[in-house]
Amino acid sequence: MQRTETFAPPAARPVYLRPAALALATVLAALFLIPVVVGDAFIYHVFITICIFAGLSTAWNIVGGYAGQLSLGHAMFYGIGAYAGMILMNMGVSPWIGMFAGAAVAVVASVVISYPCFRLHGPFFALATIAFLEVFRVLALHFRDVTGGAMGMMIELKLGWEWMVFRERLPALVIAYGMMLVCLGVAWAIREHRLGYYLVATRERESAAKAAGVQTVRVRLLAVSASAALTAMMGTFHAMYLTFIEPAAVFSLTFSIQIAMFALIGGIGTIYGPLLGAVLLVPLTEIARGALGAQALGLHGFVYGVVLLLVVLFMPNGIMGALSRFTREKAAETPSQAGPVVSMPRAETRPPLGAEVMRVEGLQKHFGGLHVTNNVSFTLREGEILGLIGPNGAGKTTVFNMISGFMRPNGGTVSVLDRDGKMHQPVSPGDFAALGVGRTFQIVQPFASMTVEENIMVGAFYRHPHVNDAREVARETAHRMGLAPWLHAEARGLTIGGLKRLEVARVMAMQPRILLLDEVMAGINQTDVRRAIDLMLSIRDTGVSIIAIEHVMQAVMSLSDRVIVLSSGEIIAEGKPQDVVRDPQVIEAYLGKDFVHADH
Figure 1 (tube, rainbow, N blue to C red):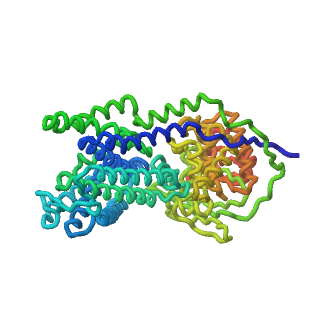
Figure 2 (cartoon, rainbow, N blue to C red; figure 1 turned 60 degrees about the vertical axis):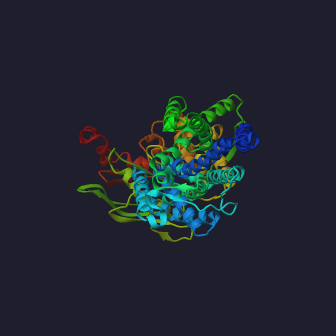
Figure 3 (cartoon, rainbow, N blue to C red; figure 1 turned 90 degrees about the vertical axis):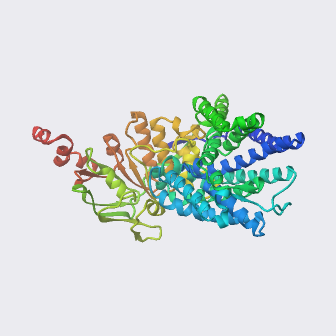
């Protein structure tokens, strides 16, 4: 006798990517060919400036967009690159070497500034970048023997490719265009590989990313290092192009905000949004300056403000956001490619319970004089479903946080069986993930701006670092969870039941040995509860151990092999579900003493 479970075949990927690639190629070709064909020196200057700002904004977007860390003093890295290149050039060192020296200094500075900030929550990174921008400006003013101080610094006039200085405009366009392509290439490589998915996940939901095994501080440091290096290299070239720099200009808060503005208008967090922002804004401001001369002083700020206001009102996600929404709507007009639902056999017999996989001993947690948990101890066996129930405020979620690394206990230990057969005592969420412990959250935590497929890929990356492998695992997992028709939909569009299934799917893609479910059936209808119960049973049949916090008693009675009841942070009952629900202490904890006496 066999039961069946529904699976769907892989859904096709969107078909609207080819026109987008063609449009991008057209824009990139136009950026180089238009000034060459026109041949005017001013047009050359405009397009060189577009390339420079597109490169700078793309570099900023790696940390400001992908990682979600607002760098308001990003010009410090530009200034480091500009001064490093110019100082070394005046010492006889080619800017081609100087730009890498400036990049190295910028990376060191970025890590020193960012590391303490990324371990905290709040606006600390944004404030720190502004503060250090001012520090570098003051240093440039103070060490005037090296930097020229307030009078600024001019390069020695050495022409040729070796020095990045030319009488003609075409060579400068070639370099600016090439460096812009490098920035775009690095941004694309980061976003389309595991690091990019991790950065977006960290930006969207840091706690969920940690539960998926993401080292959030490390990936942000990689992002800010790449961003700082590219910004410094662009700064070196721009200094050679301008032939003169001074502290107030290169270490400028206004300039930092200007760099970020292109990404905000074009589409923050997208690969090509900063490019579109620069293509739109730079010609407007430069042509206005050329036409009005000294009368246009400060006009660029007015232009940026007007365009930003229009974008906020009509395209809140930037130009790329509007284009993406249009292409998704066009794709939605085509018939669904999810395919018919097919049946996959599942054995009726259940594997026997295995060895002990988790041991919790004497867990205690208190906040001041309030004891949230007191001497909580239990064990979990392979293939077992352990229900954790209790009234609101009993300490269930606190226990979950301690047995998944999100909260340090004040006393007691949590031991998890590793694949090598030894018990280990993990500390951080990453340690628990490494031992095969995955968890969901009481308040569902999707990566809202990512698709269903990408959400699940974040979990799959833990065991499968290559994108194609992770995508294949994500699709397979989505089919098992009934999410196949929504693979390419943004997670924010799912119902609450769909979001809960998505969170379970993301955890299951990590191939855990222990699954911690925090009220996954709360707020869903009875049909979805029945489906969720069947899904949990199918997961259990693969040998995965489950600890589930639940208030839906139908689920507790149907799923649990054993139930633990918490009240006021203490275990008051433990045993089979049908025995526990009749326990007088449990009835009293849920319904009060009057109900117990009335029952007697």
